[in-house]
Image 1 (cartoon, one colour):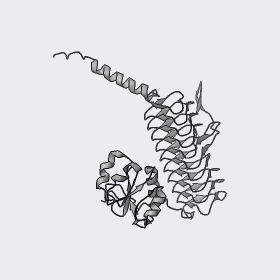
Image 2: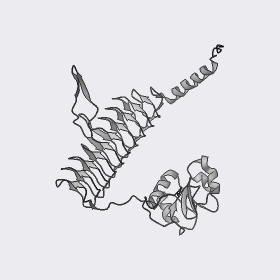
Image 3: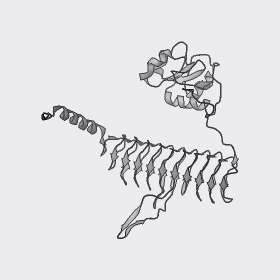
Image 4: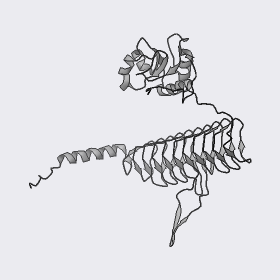
Length: 349
């Protein structure tokens, strides 16, 4: 079986070749070499060949740079002189961003194949742009609106009244209800949007479900990972701000509001009515109680337990979550105590 194949054409669209000048322009970088040199793909430093582009953004891997066979390498200015003479240095201030743009140049997102698959079921009262692709076994109910250039995968369920903007990608087995979606939104397979929130009243006879009368609003350029769930609001809307990234297996409760460009990593749980302001970052398996506010630019570490508001720009760890300096001081104290503890001798038998 083949290994280390980058951009296998069985799965990924491919374009090119491109000249060095075109690649440097896409990366936002500069070169001091023949601008007409051509390259046909991208690959990691360890396996790249003379016709491929690679990159280095972390000094920890600089030794690999010395032996690479890549034809050209994206590097930050301070590493330009480390690029071997057999390769061309493409000097980029934001190396990782440059790499994303170059990789996207060679492997663009596949275009939609316009039309509704004959095995899909779309209501005659749905509005579907002719340039959109609807895959097999989709169910699209009345009042749905889908904009131009969208790709809707197989077995997708879109309930009545849902609106989807332009150039969106909806993966297989996604279900959407009570939701308004902006432009260039990507929902990975199995995502669930718009279902009822977890809300009920206690009575003498048991639990009474509280109607969930809000919506889910997904703003432009959002990505929602596979098998993540976003509950609709109870009386307010659940909102995912523009440019935000939600990883796989994330649970977002009713009335939650994410600002723009938030990052929420896998297996995070966010309880109802919690607010994450712009540019908040949340590590994997962190958990939030309801009705707390996480200030702009705050960072919440993996497995943190957030039970109160967090100030803008703060970095917190642990459960309950606390400022990182306090957390590490407590860990160091416990370690010192552990070393000083004298264990009783074992009893002889």
